[in-house]
Image 1 (cartoon, rainbow, N blue to C red):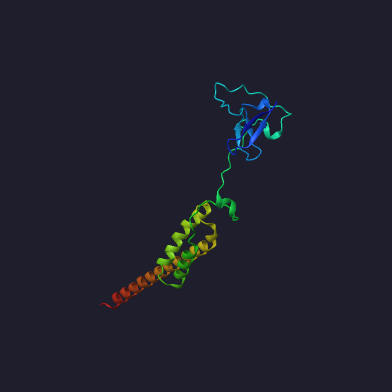
Image 2: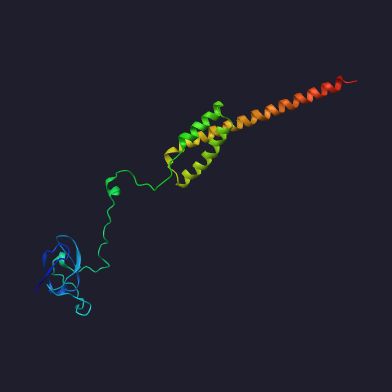
Length: 184
């Protein structure tokens, strides 16, 4: 014979089969899982009946649900449900545009070789972070182009400086040889 109990969450009066008294049941109205007890009777550990096997004749909403099988409470995060963008880990913003501008400035000679060298160094560090997943990958192409321009401008400036040094060394050698040849 069914017993009457009420849901502690919504207060709805429920009729629960005898064999489910003292077991976990789910309220059909609010979905709250609670231990079924006789109306007005508090079931403490000393008065709780021994758990019985649920009857297959009991309605599905009143069948016992062991606590281990009870679904965990769902945590709702507003941003996750309302946001249609793909989920990404928190990443550093990329500096691709800055590195590209520094590389271009290095190539055209503004502030070179400093701007080219800075673009090369920053580009190497950022490419490493992008490939490791620590930095936003959207700026990878700008970062890579700026890094390459920085490399090219730095190498050009080093070759130009080396060529100038070589030219002046040759001039001093020629002038020294000419001065030595003109002495008596």
